[in-house]
Length: 279
Ligand code: PAF
Image (cartoon, rainbow, N blue to C red; front, side):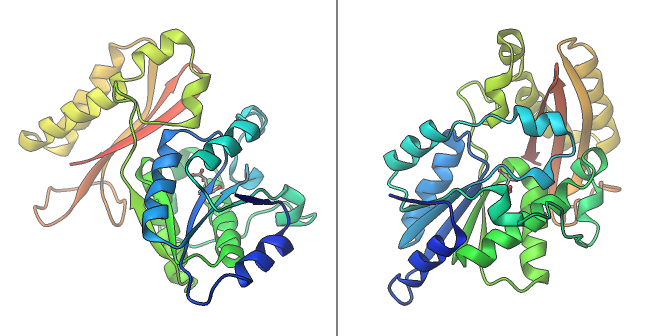
C-alpha cells in the first residue's frame, strides 16, 4: 500500500499505471469503520486498483467545533486500509488542497442543496462539492463509491459530476449497520453509553414509518414519527421528511410511479445522527 500526501506524487503514480487500468475511488474523512471498508471491498471487486483519500475537509463544516472535534485516527485508518488491500492512500493537508485560500466554490445543484441537510448546515454542500470535484480531478477515477447514509450528498455529487462533465461513474452503496440497526458513522464513537444504547431507536422508527407509509398518507406518517420522538427524552428530532429520491423535494401526493425515501436527523445530546430508508 502506497501513501502519498502530495498531489504531485499521487499524480505521478496514477500516470504510471497500465493504460486502461480502472481506478476505484473511495473519498473519506478518515475515522474509518466497517461501512467504509465495505465501500473499499466493493471498489476492489470492480476495479484494477483502489485509491482511498483521507482528508478532513474544513470547508464542509458549518461549525468550527465540529471540525476541531472530528475524530482523527490516521494510524488505525492506515492499518485498516492495509487489511483490505487498499492500493493507494492519498492524505493531503488543507494547504496542499486549498493553497492559502480555504474557501468553497459556489455550486448550483438544481435545488437539491436547499432540502433537509441544506436547511441546517449552511454552506455544507458547497464545501462537499468543492472537495469532491477537486479530488475527482486529481484521482480521475473510473468509478467512485459513496454510502447511501448521506443520501442527499450522494445525489448532489451525482449532480455535480453530471453538470461538470466529470467522467466517473458514481456508485451509491447500501447503508452499513451495526447489529442493532444503528447506521455506521464516525460520530457513533462519540456517543455516551446511554445515548449509544438508545440510538437504534432511530432505525427502528424508520422501519415502522415505512410500514405506516403503506396505509397512511405522508403527513400522517410525519406526525406519527414526531410523536414517537416526543416520548424519547434522550433523542431530539431535528427533521423527519419524506421526499422524492431524485429531486429530494418533499412529497405532496403519493404517486405510485415515484420512488420515495424517508430522511431523518436526530440529536443524541450534542451528536447529530442522520439516517434514511427507501419506502
Ligand atoms: O462523506 C464524507 O466522508 C465526506 O463528505 C466526503 C465525501 C469524503 C467529502 O469530504
